[in-house]
Image (cartoon, rainbow, N blue to C red; front, side):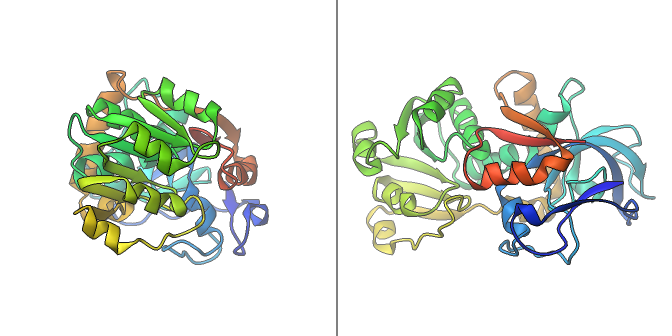
Length: 323
């Protein structure tokens, strides 16, 4: 089978496309014939050895896939050969086959396209976990989404709006803000053209109830400064490349909470909760409340180009590799 291998830690250019034997099926696992794989920001970190999970070399990046179950280990009863599924792999997804713990695999709607399914799990499940379980976002609250035109950003705009919040989208260009508006954002801030702090004062004079932050850097403390009383800052990631030093005095003055969002670990800690969340998200997709944006589907061999686009923050929505 073909696989995009990381044989030495480094940039996307260091990845190599190889032919290898299919992986062995382990206890409690299923084998998936991959139709498409989602591309996510942590994929760039893991190939450089900068992510909290450091698999042994060689390995393939790729934390989510969609495809058809080819084989089921003894004792796995919830899934069957031939099922159309998506899976959270953590790594290894940039390949023609993957073997995944059954608890990380869920059936997808019959009419969901492969590219949509491949890019669905990480962005929507992360955002559902953040807004619904961590922040307990309420109707009428004000939600700021940083990096709002990216994969998780657009998911946060859509889910925040569906949950009844007033959504403020922050992105780096007017084109990206047009995209967030089309997906439900009530306000938009181009933080490259305008001062983020002054614009937040103008559009959210009563403060921000929830901040969804997959970006980090200077924006984090600016948003924290504009937090409402009892607000919640969701630390989702650091796409800017800079892990901010949180100003604790702002946490005190705003009586607010800073919440970590480590969704990937929650899948293994609470697999039943993950399955329930995915079922709820698929129902919203079926009803048309969620509209995933796959901006580009690229063949497996173009994985380095897809990762570069994500690393350089040129991508909007979701990038997917097709197999």
